Image (cartoon, rainbow, N blue to C red; front, top):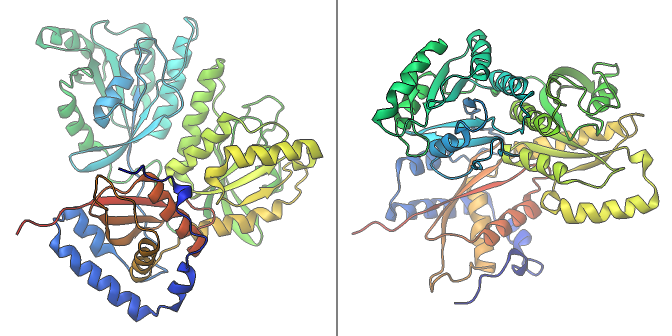
Length: 504
């Protein structure tokens, strides 16, 4: 079988897609979409499919979005099995699991599903505390988790019993006005259950004996957790209307607080040469360009932890939370230094959360010609996957070009809210597939039966297909969507539903 060509091999330079689509009238588009929709009756569809199809809208101004998922934070000292429990809850191996304590690294939140309910799991594992710093580290981690979660799962190693660190965390958990569940992990069989019972002494209610390794007791625990988790997160709730919410994110000391201060026209946030001097996210209503915006400065963390890795970890936790609360994220990049892996990680975190994106290249006034040449090369190499994001070159210190931020934010948010009517989208798909058919897979050619935009914020499309579409082909569809409809500043999500014909 011929190898599947990469995305770049789908050459769109000679197709007439834009002209063909502009020549179609709305009635023609609607009729074709109706015919394709009726054709789906020959395929096995489930309830979820029917919900997606019923939600299909012809109104380009209709804004729909998925509500913020409830958040379950998992806390506990190192090596009690938090990441193993995360993997068990997810049903897949996502969190890093090793015998060395504190190996959890960059990704801290995961989307999970149990009994048809979706929720976010925050794994607060990652830091490498020394013996002296362990109490402070675990306490800081628990504190962050409690701030950001709708419910907390506290994991203790039942075979070790409650340590002084565990008791320290319990004091914090008792103060919190959120549901707390106590998981007694590593109870692999019935003989170890008495070890779990001893943990009643912690005063957090019933210890739930579980085995993250074997899955024992996890289903019952999840059933009970879901009884108290709200349908929509109370922490990262979606607010409709009011000023648009902007998160300013970036690695320490790139100028996030200076940017907020300039925008607000006052010293609202402490700015210090020391990286990470900002404490808690600060919400600030600011008027720029004749419009009110709500800025969230997410810089960092409470500096109780003096370990760099721990500090980075909590900063990423807070960044995650702020991005979840925002609609658009401004990622601030310090152009006086090479674009780092951390910059790219923060951008990827925004993409993963599905928020609109603007790139603010700060300290532009410090650039000389040589650094500018290197910077362009770095942008080309490291930021190619977000070439669609608006770029603004600013100086947060002097306020230079700050006014360019507003049109960039407006463009990104408009794209994020964009809906393509079902008729138009199916006309686009039909013409695209006719010009650039999907390559054969195992002697068969997957067909796109029907497509619809399931939601906006971010624009999310569902394709009903007869087979799996290669990732390169899906990226090609995304690229052509951008070239024809814009979507500047917004991620685009394409989901597939592979369906088989009904048996006669």
